[in-house]
Image (tube, rainbow, N blue to C red; front, top):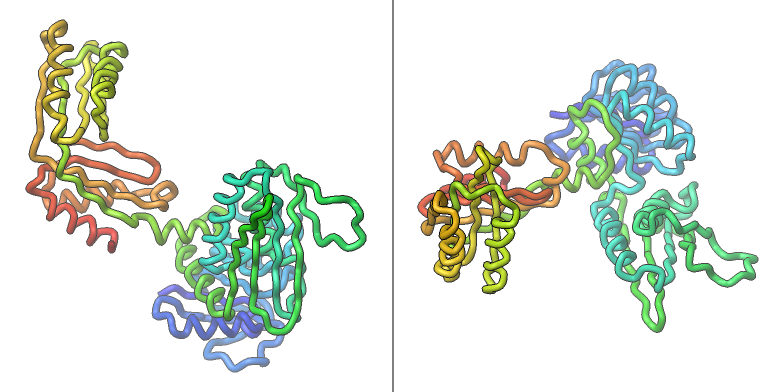
Length: 406
């Protein structure tokens, strides 16, 4: 059970979070903090200030006002408690203070806790990279009439996501009242609308020659922000130092998302191959000229001027591959070729693997428990591929599915 201090517990968002936490069996709010402690009926003690809190917690969650930041950072520092900041409207100096504190304790900050908004950031980056300067970019955000900061922190987050594609070369224009100059290609327009009870709507407009792409996210209620904040709390429990955001949470939840198997491959291992770049290049050049698609490739470190080279390829191309190796062997008699026909290639893949340690260890542990031996391994930032005996395909797949909850 994660013990939580909810800062700003009696505000509108604080009450939504309190309700969501009460329904979550992984989180217990042990204390709340609010300048008006008696303005709501809570099942936990509420204090007027952080200095009065007696309870120990695993995480502090803040839904309050920017002015409370110094006391929050000081409390996190003194108690070494991870801090999740869901408040917006911070100044440049505030953001610098948050970054400095993250070097001493773990701090999470996100202008928007919605999963949809954070996916939207990835989508608009992709659009911006495709359109480049040929499309004008405008951001329109809408919120309820009680929201104080304008533009919203989320609007800034979206603008920064787009500007990242342009290496920060775009400048922001806030509305165009009284402007008489035509629009510049180097600007991103940001516009705010305030009215009624709009929970939150953000639209990024890409306007080109005779075509428009709009990407919009609409928040129907505050519940989505509360659930996102509680996911952040779970992620931050136990963290020691560092500055985190919602992308870290999403990647953690999507560490491994896919498992693929392929038993239509064979593996060729060329032993005692001279460590000569021209010879190695010649092998793959000849395979390419024959239209053979080589998949996994692995090479051992040189020993006494020789290496072992392994690769996989489609079963129907085995005879051609062996012919290529035979040509090399005519001038290098020490070469020995091993063929492995009864194999399966298993690939574990996930976007979160790039920033999550221990994935390979969990894969190896899962296979080791089934006494499954690995013949070949290749990796990338988001993928681990390995070759095993075909007879172990079912057991290996089930072990990895269990290990990662696929």
